[in-house]
Image (tube, rainbow, N blue to C red):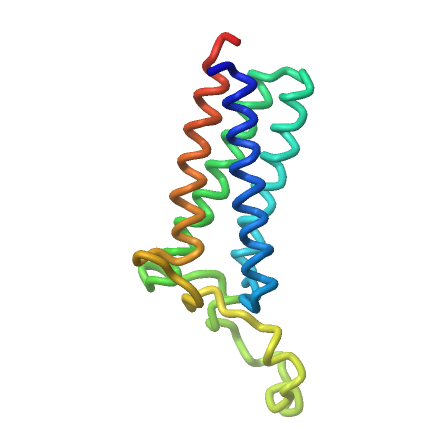
Length: 154
């Protein structure tokens, strides 16, 4: 396989993962804050893949896209660990925040109850892995594809 084929495969892989996240969202699975964090490196990898395929320093852009893939994989591992109660997540989306800044009316309000998605709750899983876990595994695989692309001579 040529470097361009490896780059194209990885770019399509990231587009599939990002598209899958949006598809789940259309099915009613609202993303939490960490889910949204995981999307940005996918977008960066897609952009870098397009740049590499258009001839802009393919080896360097492939390496940078590999770093983006490792980044989203790392966030996915962290998020999956939060979901499994292996460690604590950010207080902003794991329920560990301080309530001192809220008034009684704020605490009783139901206006935002449907918009808050907790990062420590598993809303979907397949074969024992949550969406965050699958993102971690698949993104790590894509990082290996990017590494293969960067290592190719042509």
